[in-house]
Length: 169
Image: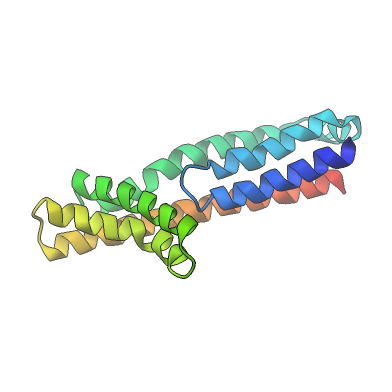
């Protein structure tokens, strides 16, 4: 039973890491669930208790905050660089299309996922009749927001993985 819980925990961390890049999967909460699984093993429950659950609580709060902030980062980036709501909507659509292409194509999938929000923001601005400069700025902001959000999620998941490994080893 103990080995099965540890394996499931490792799988949750890996799926969470994938979810930090793919839309639709909340990566940090999935990885955080791996830590919560440790409560089912008395030996590890004691290890968590020795730290007064401080790390567990801190990581839970950080996980929640990063998950909320991540949804806002591409929108914030688009607005910060002068984009409009049309650019934000386009960014969201581009992210979804990029994720779809990631699942169903081999070569261009990762590129589509990376560039999808920026292309979507650009096209959204152009659809609204904005000039090229505004559309490019919106796309740049969306791209930087997406990258910043992804980076924050990956860092949190790495911290969760390190804490998970420290508890079980």
